Length: 350
Image (cartoon, rainbow, N blue to C red):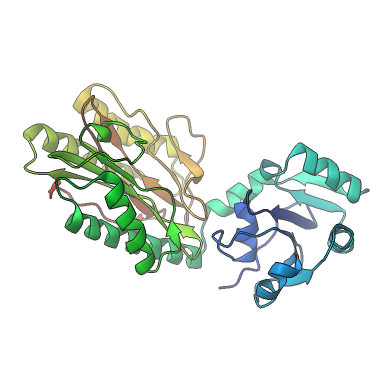
């Protein structure tokens, strides 16, 4: 894959940096690395290959990467010198990931440079995925769907939510994932009524089992949710699943280039309101890529418009006091939406 990405307009060089405890996803976007490989380094992009300024401990590994030129520095003075030599006059900065104190130091070290906040431009650039990025998200989705098959075979009464989650993490790595995109949400019974339930020691009993799972494959994420029923589902449970599934299908059908994200939310929410009198308590979806949550937002307040190549989630859900149903698929926006995952039409019994 070629990572010779164009920098935002209005600047002649882009400066990004990342630390092990503060990861800027844009650093990994421009270097073509996975954010699972946590670094402390600076990156300068402009004409030609990006330059990564790093320390002796990480230089040996980074110097073998063909996506950028690695420069070894051993102290602060050498870092400052390397920055001065390579940065242009108009320097783009991602202010979403730069503290006030860090910005103050940069202005002191790089006197005479004009710093320009390009955080919004970077966000927009990353929203539209290249073919290679879509391939990685597709592979992450493929692994995730295999994890659901693993869950279906292992979920049974008496097992704990956390026990299932732990098994999924082990299986994900066996299948080729770098790790989980987020802690798996395994919500049984009444816990399924909590959209962001924290997986715990609750034992599986009869009733709804909601599983929200995502993995990281070569730096890119998946995010898929399935709802099951342990035992024989009632008419009420089947009905809610059918309503949510209809909302999912309608949203996917509406999701095309040039359509406002808000309209997609409304297309799904109107079906849920018709079925239950009230709508969703969360957004319908979000962008997907290096991070689990990226632009665009697919919500009632979104002002964004979908474009070809965007990868988004579609995740309608509805929750009563004692159970909830959510179905989530990942798609690529195109003239005809491309499905990266496919939910079953009926409520699956385990």
